[in-house]
Length: 153
Ligand SMILES: [Zn+2]
Ligand SMILES: [Zn+2]
Image (cartoon, rainbow, N blue to C red):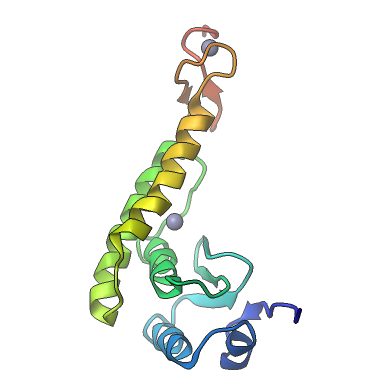
């Protein structure tokens, strides 16, 4: 297997990673339209605050996933520490992605959006459960979880 190209987006690297012409043209259009942000190729679609959008390997909804990460950037998301805030940010970024999808005539597949959000909901639910008693814990601004039953302040 040819190793995946990472780093600053170029047409050649994207092609090497398996992207087709149409997707590459789309990414280049985004890069032109959002020249304030930095687009790089990487292992996973993600947003690195404050300005870096990571384009993961090709998948059926690559374009929509990039719009979502761009959504985080456009919304000015910074602090991903608080988990409840994180879920709110994921929602916001998808709302922004849907607006961008209209502009770029990309299908904003609602199943994809809900699946992605579900992974965060599940993750949040898992993380917030008290491992001792199973009660839902709450998070303080230092990002620590506390169980109202097992811990007293
Ligand atoms: Zn996100
Ligand atoms: Zn507990």
